Image 1 (spheres, rainbow, N blue to C red):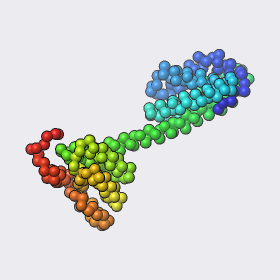
Image 2 (cartoon, rainbow, N blue to C red):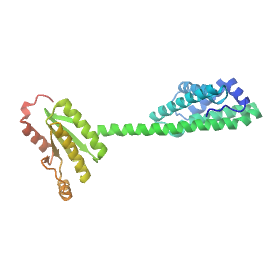
Image 3 (cartoon, rainbow, N blue to C red):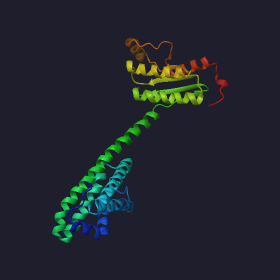
Image 4 (cartoon, helix red, strand yellow):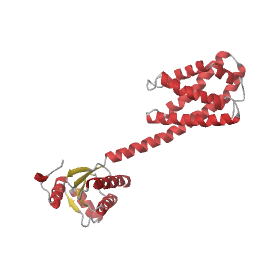
Length: 282
């Protein structure tokens, strides 16, 4: 979108009535914001866009238009990313740009300038292009926001807690897939480096079902911890899960397994030679 407007009547109108048009643009957009952005905030944001649109769309040397067009796209992209992070819909974001057409059309009709009215179609098409830029950027930004939130949820859903001196616990709740296993493994290894713990308890009481894939994920986590010199205990093996594991032919080998977290903690305390009365750090 680097070409200038073919006509000059509309360009003159936009420049001579800049404050009026900008004020109307802000008014239209503010009506769709439901108070989430103030008129002053919108005026600053849309004022910058208006100035760039004047330079990129309404004339001037080709090199200046090209530079302004790049700045305009960057400004629209930043606005879209900001709106995505703040929870605006893509329609609300794109409409903020499209609303400029309504403001301009109202002034063109009020002026009864037929030449400016004829030029409006070209201007409208260029504003539509800008609206599409915001929509596309918003979609990409929103996908990134969702991906970041999913990563944060994964981290929150896989805490590694200190149960006792030298003993860590990893309570697992929900489905254990490849992505989550990676988070569990990374979190556990980081805590092992921080604490130097010798025993880690992987509690699967909250895992609804264990199939071959889940079992393999558990084994990978155990092997990673073993490479750090830590013994792992798997707790929360309910009767139904035990039957499933046997039916699947999954072998945990030398890995200690316990029915409950309490049993696993008792085992870990005995293994480490610690007794409750000797606890030194909560």
